[in-house]
Length: 502
Image 1 (cartoon, one colour):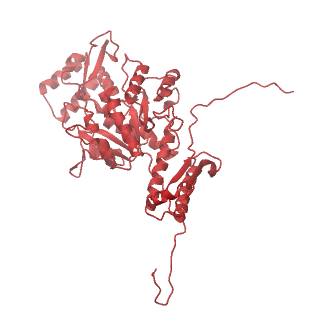
Image 2 (cartoon, helix red, strand yellow):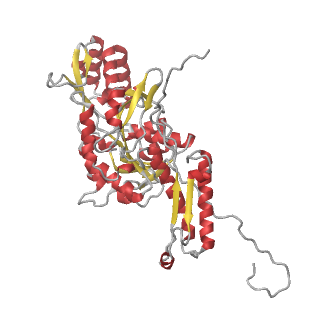
Image 3 (tube, one colour):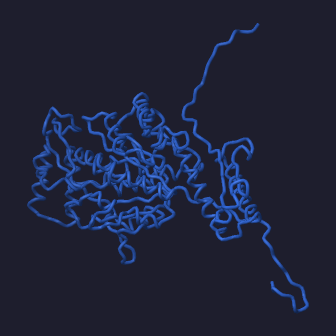
């Protein structure tokens, strides 16, 4: 409308009747950090660049497939040491993955999408394509080094969308990963205040005890910023690696099938293949199919290799569960008592008694969430605590993530009022916007209370949250109190007999 009236006529002036609105931010957008087969889009390298994808098909197109790991099969080096073995022709044999052949990233992405995953970011720190002999997983690829001082977390500070951090490959570093990488994840999440880290514990060896493994994790992770992380245990026996993905090429070159297979027909097939010295894909496929038909032992070996490749850390699957629960129920629903897909069982069956020490840590309060099998039900997530398990404020994952969602949503919404007049008119507008946002969350069940007044409270204004000096200093202070719903982790039913009434 014209600012001055000089020409006779009718002028229309439109005014906004409603305050600005706050929109809830995305809550389940994990960023996966690790090693990929390739990292290229439209001829440009994506190494060191967080890249958004929406499906597993897009992942394979941009980042390729999995690493073709190789294994050795041999009798136990020391029969007195308890090891994971399998029976081969009546003998106990140990299957060992070759050095620098450990790669969990690709199969963990598959497990993520199998459990409800959707939009996510992929951060490739390096590629293993063209490296058939293996690649080395190094902590410096994640936290930086003198040669490459920029860590992945400095790069992620420029990305505002990710809300979860998952690093499947680093668990191959062993217990050192806890105080080198995981602590950096917690520092980064605390600095950003918009994301959480999902952590794996090291895989338990047959000779180890669960309590010792938990103590090792708790000692390594420290006590800083624990409310920004959650840990899951044990590892999973997944089903993402299919039978057709494993063949004789998964055996190290030092393995001679002629000595491993007892069937005469299979030995003849091996001899003919060696003599032919064929290397084309068709010949290898025919050789593989012939061995499967002639040798049950060969099939047993491949099944054992496949089972080892399917043993995966659980954090990536949990990222999928977070997405599934957020989309179906809301971020305020605890991501627990949910079954895992494409998972046959945990690698270790944790009993109710054994879980007590993992779920509740009296000393430091570092809780570890357990994944347990239940007969007739399936494999369920049976824990919903952050690492800060003794905190009344931040004990539960859904409380921490709901507050992150509210904080980031209101942060983006109030950005529009930066440099607006710091007066009562602006205060009323901002308060109305926040009240409307929180009222909608209360209606959806995110906040506890019979009426909105019990669920949240918003204060802003001179004499309420600000002094005259604050206004002179350019400060607009807003106080928001919310009653976030908490999960019923322990349900107690009391029974008492009463006297029969005549």
